[in-house]
Length: 94
Image (cartoon, rainbow, N blue to C red; front, side, top):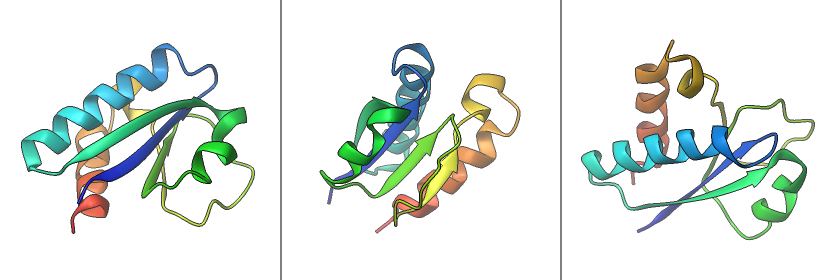
């Protein structure tokens, strides 16, 4: 079963791209089928309504989306990146 991860940042350009690629690579190595969707934080509610299993956001969320949300900043700083990837894989396992 393919999982959907929404990757959200301020402008949906560089930051979300870095995070999305890292998530895709980690999932591929773990044998988890995943689709990542990148969006601006302002567009997040619209993307959630299309269905998702997880949100990884580098910006603060001001509402409860009803699905797990992880802080994506470790993809930018490198600090805690391995732990974040472990959390993502755990949440996406069947």
